[in-house]
Amino acid sequence: MFDLIIRNANLPDGRQGIDVGIRGGTIGAIEPNLAATAGEEIDATGRLLSPPFCDPHFHMDATLSLGLPRMNISGTLLEGIALWGELRPTLTKEALVERALRYCDLAVSQGLLAIRSHVDTSDPRLVTAEALLEVREKVAPYIDLQLVAFPQDGYYRAPDGVASLERALDMGVDIVGGIPHFERTMEDGARSVEALCRIAADRGLPVDMHCDETDDPLSRHIETLAAETVRFGLQGRVAGSHLTSMHSMDNYYVSKLIPLMVEAKINVIPNPLINIMLQGRHDSYPKRRGMTRVKELMAAGLNVAFGHDCVMDPWYSMGSGDMLEVAHMAVHVTQMGGIEDKCRIFDAITVNSAKTMGLEGYGLEVGFKADLVLLQAADVSEALRLKPNRLFVIKAGKVIARTAPRIGELFLDGRPTSIDIARDYIPQATQG
Ligand SMILES: [Zn+2]
Image 1 (cartoon, rainbow, N blue to C red):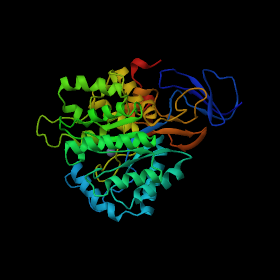
Image 2 (cartoon, rainbow, N blue to C red):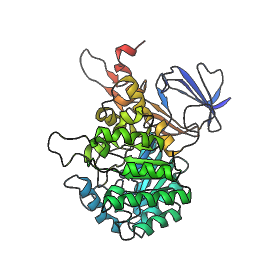
Image 3 (cartoon, protein in one colour):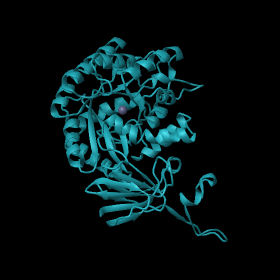
Image 4 (cartoon, rainbow, N blue to C red):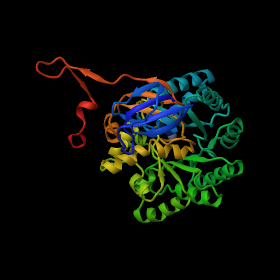
C-alpha cells in the first residue's frame, strides 16, 4: 500500500512504462506494472517523470526588480551593476521578501525545487541577507534554498566588503562567494580568492565564486581558485560560476588548466542565458559567444551544472524560472544537439545541479525523496525542445503544483479540432 502511485511514466534514463510508488514522502518502488494500491494514483500516460529542476546560480535579492529605479538602457553587464548600485540603498526587507516569495511561487509552478542564490553583501546594512534568510525559512517546506555571501562590488574593492561578507556568514548565510575579476587588479583578484578559500576552510563552508565573467582571455582566476582549492583541501566543495573567459583562452593554456580543475574537483556553473546575452559586447564581428567550454569540461569529467542567474532584474529583462529554457539555450550555444549531448544537457539542470548543491536523497531511486515533476513531453529530448507544461509537481510525495496540458483548439475545415503540442508531434523515428 502506497500513498501515491504514478503509473506509466517515462524516465530520463530512457525507461518507459514505469510505475513509481511513494510512501511517507520517499520513493518506495520504481518498476513496471507495480502490483499495489495507493490512496491516490496519477496516470502519467507515457509522459516524462523527472526529479525536480535545480538552479545552482541565481540572484533572488534582485529578481523581479525590473524597471526599478529605471531600465538598463545599454543592456550591458556593467550598466546592470551600476543600476543595481542605484537600487540597493532603497531596498527594504519587506520588499525583498515579497519579491523573493513571489519568485519561489513561480519556481514551484515550473518544477524548480532547489535554488542556490547569491546574496549581495556590499551594502553593510545587509538587508538582503536578512530578507533571504527569512525567505529560506519560509520556503523550506517546498524549496531547498542555499545562500551565497556575494561581494558584488568587490571583496577588496568595496569599502566594507571584507567585514560585510564575514557578518553575512555569521548571520547564517551558507556559502562563501567572490568576484575576483571585478577587483581593481589581477593581483587583488588573486588575493581575494586566497582569502575567501581560507574563510571557507576555517568555517567548513563551500565556495561559489563568480569567476572570470569576462571575455578577457587573460582573466585566469579559475587557475588560482583551483590551486587554492587543492591547497586548502576543499576539493569537491568549490564552484566556479560563469568562467566565460575560458571561451577566449588559448587552447594550449586550457590544456593545462582543465587537468588542474579536475584535480580540484571544481563544479562548473555556466549561465547560458546570461552569458550569451552579456558577453561579447566589446566585439564587432566576428562576435564571441562568451560561453565556457561546456563540452570539453564535461568530457574531462568535471561536474557541469547550468544556472538561470537572473529573471527580470537589472541585468536581464527576460526569464520565467524555467530551467528548460536555460537548457534550451545551452543546447544551441554549446552546439550540443546530439541525442547523448541532450541527455547531458538535461543532467546539467537536474542531477549535476543537485550534486553541485550537495543535495541529499535527490534522484529517481528507491529510498530517495519523492520530489518529482511530470512533464507534458515523452522524453528528455522532447522536454528540451518544447519546454512543456509541468503537469504535476510533487514534493515529499504531495502534489504542490499542477498545470493543465497545453492543448490548442483549431477551427479549420477538414483539419483536426485540437492539437497536443507534445503528443501529436513525437518524432516519427521514436514512435511505436
Ligand atoms: Zn550571478
